[in-house]
Image 1: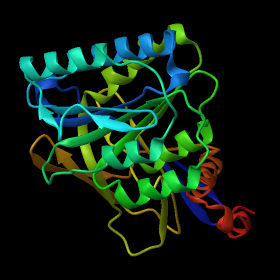
Image 2: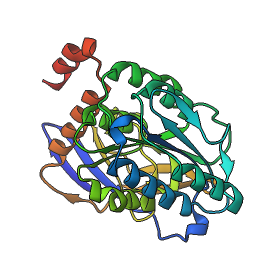
Image 3: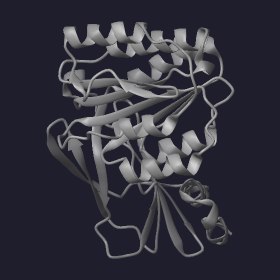
Image 4: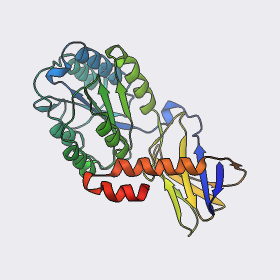
Length: 302
């Protein structure tokens, strides 16, 4: 815990790190792989993407469910709905991935709707991996689909090469409680995607909530807290008239609810915490904006 008092306001930065857990203790996943097979992916792009996707399939563990969706001018799915990872289903998927060829246009909207459909009500962590090298033009239409259909999914976007619209993909991943990975060089595809897969296959805590135990006005960022993965910290910045003595952090771990009360004592006073809080707020506001809302958000930032 780091704190700073500035202009009569109290600011805090909290960093929480999960305990080390075995892979068997991590949450089961439903993971949907979406791969761009349009003409611009021809050559080394589709070869590298197929190899990386085959690597990802090999990393699934018993209890996970998965599906593979490809899109170009049309969208098609390997299975009608997510299938349990078994030797037979995985071999079917590997054969399917190896057969993927690049050609046609880039129609992302249907692929995005398909990936966010068929969300069953269970405790699995649902992850959508969206991989493309295409230039995204209809940003607002795609973002509307994410807002309306995200549900319990987490959206991870991967941009390959120089064409992807990184602004949209970062914004989409942030709203989707996932991350954006940009891969500028084709020879980096396998290593960068392996790093991403290693991270997201070890979810420790999801649906995280912080109860501030107080009636005071507390403004914390980010407001949509991402899932917690093994070895990664959860970092929250907050502003209040007066910080509470303790907070309660809760979420879902494996098949049960988890919560812990943390005392906000023993922290160190440091300069810059107020600035960090402000930067986090501005970044969140800018990610949420639409063109029509820009002026109102601009006034808040000023």
